[in-house]
Amino acid sequence: MPGLFILIDFALAYASLSPDGRAFLRKQRSGHNKGRTPESAALLRNRSSRLSLIRSLRTCDAVFAGSVPESECVASGRRRSSIYPRFVPFAWISLEIWTRLCAAYGISPDKDDVRLLVLLTFVHREWNDLVDDVPQETLYRSLRSAAPPEPRFRLLGTLTAMTNALAKRKGRFEKLFQNWQRSMEFYNRPFKPEEAAAFLEGKAEFNRISYSTALLSEVPPELAEALQPFFIWFLALDDASDIVRDRARGRSTYMTVAADPEEEIWKFFRQSEEAVRRTSPRDPGPLFLLMRSMTADVAAAIRQGRDIESDFYAAPRTR
Image (cartoon, rainbow, N blue to C red; front, side):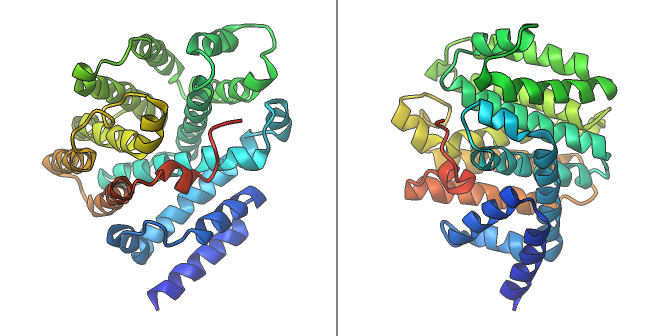
């Protein structure tokens, strides 16, 4: 019977999504049992957890529908339907994990906070996809130039302008911009395998500042204490989810040089869980349920040699 309730809840969600969102859910349904772990099954069986996931998906779907113009997609040589699976699942994960993290400490971001977080994830996804083929200095100049951007950079420019406008209205632009400039300098340095741990910690610091600034006007001390280990776990998981693709491309990351990537992500999960517990949160159960599910899914993908990005995002990185 729990399976029936899951289908009903997602059927109701399906009806409320945009056409692109409905296409995404159909794609997910077609591969429903691929790589399913007991942890991810437990996540969906819990109805409050399931409804939280659905709310976050609806939010990200609505922000996408209102912020990604068809004209910008056409200009970049892509279909809107191919951009959705690149943007929304990434934002969905980010929003849901932050929703549960904030709830564990009794924090309730407002609608503009949430919108800023989602827009920021869209910008990060578009930047990261473009930088696979274009030097980041070129993207930086395009964003800073007063001249109209190249067609393929128009969507990045539009999303960045929306994000900046909302960040200025919330009084957070300067901190976000300064953090972005510092991160540009950091990522310009070559990756050295012997410095892999320090590189992961550096990435975690920049992401911690970026996303906490986007979502919260002030970070409570107890949450601030847990954020660095949390982001180390989150970014280690991101590296691990790309391990098949990165190895094929000859790209070095913390996970490609790790002796046992699966053990590493579970180690970071345990460290993050312990850091959260030390701060005496009100109710960390839903957060840990999601973190455990995400870690188990990526660990299973590593064991099976699957490209979890292709499985989940359902869209190629190439244009």
